[in-house]
Amino acid sequence: MQKIGLIGVGNIGSYFLKLFKERGFAVVAFDIDEAKLASAVQAGAAAAASPAEVAEGSDLVLLCLPGSHAVEAVMEGEAGLLQALRTGQLVVDTGTTHPATDIRYEKLCAGRGAGLLDAPITGRDKGFIMMVGGSAENFAKARDVLGAVSYKLKHIGPVGTGQVLKLANQMVLAGQWAVWAEAITWAEKAGVEPRLLKDYLEFPVSERLFGEDFSGGGTLALHYKDLGYVLELAHECGANIPLTSIVHEAFKAAKAGGDADWSQPGVVTYWRRLNARAGA
Image (cartoon, rainbow, N blue to C red; front, side, top):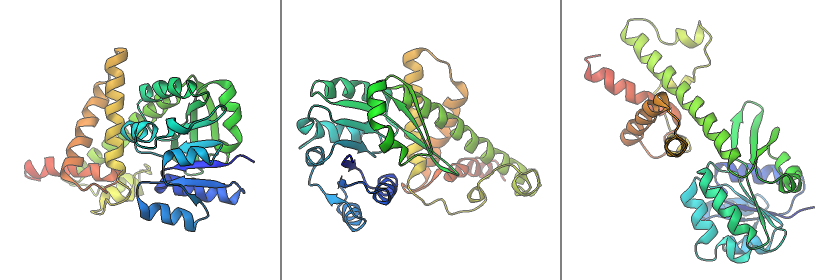
């Protein structure tokens, strides 16, 4: 059975660790947060002192990181992953990263005789859906491992295409958050109980959009980051995305006025502030 390396054991990495241990995989982990790494050790992982040490102790390395900047630091920073990769190893980026980042590192990994897949995830009620970019050969090598942490798994195309599909996913989800937030605050201003959108019209509106508690994982900031990648890629390929551009600005304003730990429902505060200034 393959030995698994996990770099990043926050919300996603720790969940992966739980699933891997349930299936009998040996796991070696690294995180710059010592408390998170200590929790991973308690959950059954062996601790590594650096990304390079993860590579030395595993066959396949999963990156569970918040974006391109973190991937770059892990790959090329002090005692980085690229220093220790060996022929036949495989790196899998499961975070949401700019496609160009993974394309670049696929080439650098190949120079070490190793492979790379981009395999971002998105959550649904049943668990995680994973969309994989990379060679068919590398996908086949990683299939059993990735299938252990996802209920749907699909090879999309070459490296970068998994990230493109994930970013399209983020466009849809961000648009939903924005429409729900706008409809809720509009209904309230117009004199109708906004909960009727959820309780009577049966829209799948998050309960947290009606409240004041938006804490949880910093996913609002992460989603804002993802929309930034979307805009960059749209500029590069010449796509026109006016709706997503507007939603990106709403996420930016909500992020600036909120806390770093806020989750996506915090975007409703953008419309609340707009309506407050309008005398709501």
